Structure formats: C-alpha cells, structure tokens
Image 1: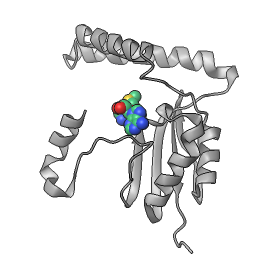
Image 2: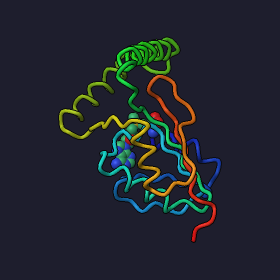
Image 3: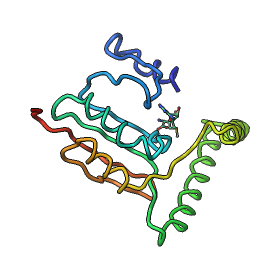
Length: 166
Ligand SMILES: C[S@@+](CC[C@H](N)C(=O)[O-])C[C@H]1O[C@@H](n2cnc3c(N)ncnc32)[C@H](O)[C@@H]1O
C-alpha cells in the first residue's frame, strides 16, 4: 500500500510525504484534515477516546476528521446486512478477477495471510458501533460531529474541532 501511495503522490513532489506509523503511539503532526479509512476497527475500545483526543489535538482550529469504517448495526439487521456485505464482496472480487485486476491465487494468499495474522493475535478487530465512535468523539473534544453516510456496515462519521480555542 505504501509504494502505491508514494507512486500516486509522486506528482506532488515534496508537498506529500508517506509515513508508516502506529496511531496508538505516534505523534500526529498538526493538520487541517485527518482522513481514516477502515483503520479504527483495529483500535481497542479502551483506546478510542484517547486516540481521538490526540487527533482532535493535532487538528488546527476548525479542522476536520473524516472517519470511514465498518461499524456495528443493531441486532435486528446485523445478520441480513452481514449477508449482503459478503454477497457484494464476492461480486466485487469476481468482477476484479474477470477484469484481470487480481487473480484468485492472490485473493487466496491474502486470506491465508489474514488468517495467519489472526491466529497470531496480530489482526485483532473491535466491532465499534457508530454510537461508541460518536461518544468518544464527544469526549475527545470534537465540537460538531455526526454520522453522514452509511451503507450496510460501512459508515462515515465526521467531526470538527472548535474554530476558536481558548
Ligand atoms: C482493513 S485495512 C484498511 C486499509 C486501507 N486504509 C483501506 O481503506 O483500504 C486496515 C489498516 O489499518 C492499519 N492499522 C491497523 N492497526 C493500526 C495502528 N495501530 N496504527 C496505524 N494503522 C493501523 C493496517 O496496517 C491496515 O493497513
């Protein structure tokens, strides 16, 4: 992923830098926008508020967090939505294989790697609910925040830090 990001950002020269860091421990540089894509389900529940606080602290006044991730849905729909997500994923993979973007062997290798990571306790997933995330954003000092989009379990929440800090 890092080499793909570097290749895509190369036209921007030194305006863009690609770094690999652990969100639980790294210093987050000051910025106007934080975009997180399908990463927060790896943040343990007891680290949510603190991680979001460090993000809020790094954002310049009025700055924005856009957080996209899989989030729990209520028990009434969980089974049906899970089945729909799996069906769409299978369709997506079949289309990618047909288009020659990926091979079945590569998909199998990725799944085997993920399974191995899970067995070694290295790919732990925590199923946060949107409410958990929004509560933690509130505790973290986000001023305006809300759920702006959801399809199946995939959910986008955004939050802004106050425009003027005391
Ligand atoms: C499901 S993948 C999502 C990848 C990509 N962001 C996307 O949207 O397709 C989860 C990503 O979270 C990253 N991740 C897991 N724990 C992390 C942590 N503590 N700090 C930073 N990244 C982490 C993994 O390295 C992996 O790239």
